[in-house]
Image 1 (tube, rainbow, N blue to C red):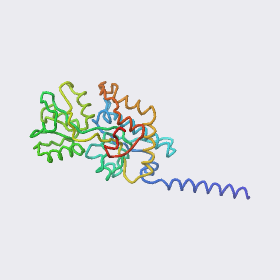
Image 2: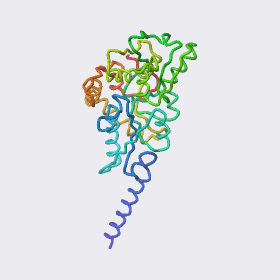
Image 3: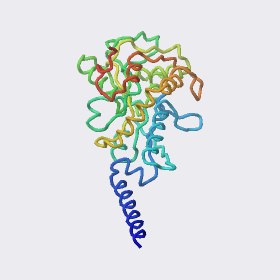
Image 4: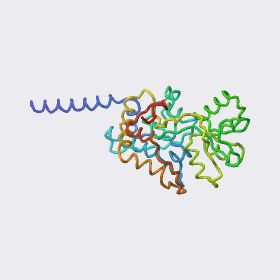
Length: 305
C-alpha cells in the first residue's frame, strides 16, 4: 500500500512538473507550442535574401537562416514535428504582421535601426549593406547631387525611402520621389525610364542589375545615403525567451563553418532560378560579426578593429 502511495505521489509530482513547465512558456514559444506551427514572413523579390523560385517557393539566404532557427525552436520545445507556415510580406506589411502575431519571424533583408528597435527586435546581424542608387550608365549619374531635379524611385515602407526623402529636403535637391509598392516595380521604373534612379540597399541593387536583360547597362553609385547598416531577422519585441533561442541558433550558425558555407552559397555561387552569380565576397566587417555575433543597430559597432 505504501509503495502504491509513493508511486501515486511520483505520478502527481511528474504531472505537476510537466504542467509547470508548460505554464512557464510565454510569448512566441507558448504560441508555437500550442499551435504546433511557426509562421515565417518572406519577401518575393529580395534576392538573394528572400525571393521566389520558378515554383513560387520562397528561397534565399535569410530563409535558410530562418529554417536553422526553426530547427532550434523545435529542439527547445522538444517537438517531434513543427509545421512551417509561409506568409508573404512587403516592406509596408512586415512590421504590422509581426506585431499582430500573423508571422513569428520576418526572413528578409530588413535593416536594424534605432527607429525599428522601438517596434521590433532583431536577431544577430547576418549582413551589412549601405543605401545607394542604381541608374543607367548612359545617364552618367554617380553622386547624390547628380539626382537634383530628377525623378527617383524607392520602395514604400523602407528605411531607404526615408533616407532619400530626408536627404532631398536637407540638400534642397528638388528630387521627385516616387513610391513603388515593391523592389521589382522600382527597378522596372528605371528600366522603362520612368525614373532615373532606384534607391535601395546596395546588395539588392546588385542582384537586380545581374538579373536584368542587360547587366552591363547599369551602374551602382559610389556615393551612399548611409553608413553600412546591419540586417537581421525580425522578431517581436519584449519576448526574451524566444529571442534567446533565436540568438543561440544564429550565433551557433555564424560561428561554425556552416555560416561561411551559407554565405558562399548565396553570394559567391550560381543561384536559382537563373543561375546568376552575385560575386560579392564577404567583407571584413561581416567576417568580424560572424566571429563575434551582435544585434547592435549602430553601424559604428561593426567597424573592423
